[in-house]
Length: 485
Picture 1 (cartoon, rainbow, N blue to C red):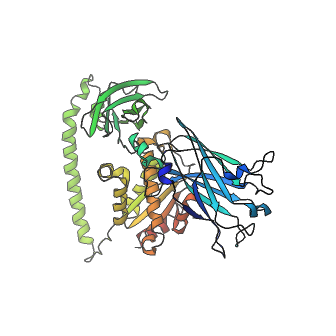
Picture 2: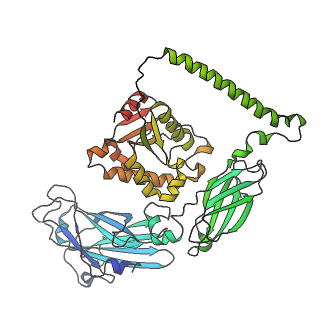
Picture 3: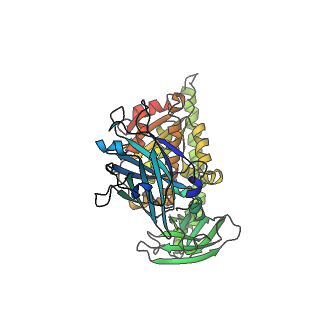
């Protein structure tokens, strides 16, 4: 039996209605464990039902009674033929092919005798069963057959499918206890900057372990520098690796944790390397050139003189403008607060940041962006931060970018190591939107913007009820509607 199955099934009776609407005699199922052979195998039946039409499997979060498990949602459709009148039950078995072999079955009895091949509305008989806890990254073989089964030497009615459970990066699986022990919720917030002869790496540690290895790897995955860190009760760790600016072109930083639950098999995290702010400017001058040294004294004096000249010209301009200004100038309208939620595949630098600057410069908006409030997100947690920002925002804008938009390698979805956080942010924001679908007052604050010919996927079809704009073709109407609170 699969781990955790007795606590979810045991002798509990599960009732699941079919997809058909309520009729004169509503059909339903009652499921219970049955690992051995069914009693119908012991007799020969004159007539037996046909097999199933389809068998589908999905992974879903478990009920609130067991939040540490992810279950299989198994659905099947019956064939439309006369033999359906002989159908008594459907048996489902799950065979796990992970590190430890597992096998478990349930039998779902139909509570009513089938009187017709289809439900009253003319659709198909479809049933669902939720159960069988699964582990991450494990292969499962799900088989199902109708009861009474086919007799010996007759065509079998068994139908089966293969299902591979998602890994700990999956939005549902990552919240299970096993994945949390592997560090699925650990957000290192990596910052790495390139100096002239070294790379300084800073990241957040986890309470799951204190040992980490930091690697600097080239585009060809060659190790340019590495260091072991043992941090005790430190929330942030810093290490400097000797990698020159020439060697570090296109390199990335990798953090390898060593947690007690996964030891040497923990998921590593990656981050991009940027130039340190102090490495730009006068620090780049060649100290061996004699003519460059006087600049250190000349430049501050020139800057002070230019500042004084600019201030004087500005005061003269303001005095002249004040004389020509009308006596009553209407006050500027206050800006609005916009929460910007971007699709994980959007190019952050070329699409998200440019659009945020457009909102601030042309649409009188104060933009709230998760990457601009990393510290506050880390302190509050993504869920609490997003809920608070959505409540305070005047508008919530969902941004989509066409894959055909120009985006070089330095600004792809994973630039800056925030692809995972972008996926979490978008999924949580979409769930908050879905919860507001019944409230017209809350729904009015949402807008959808697409850059290029970006289209909504089927799983995001609910956003179709929101006003949608294509930039820059509809820039004027978008700003006008954005500000019309």
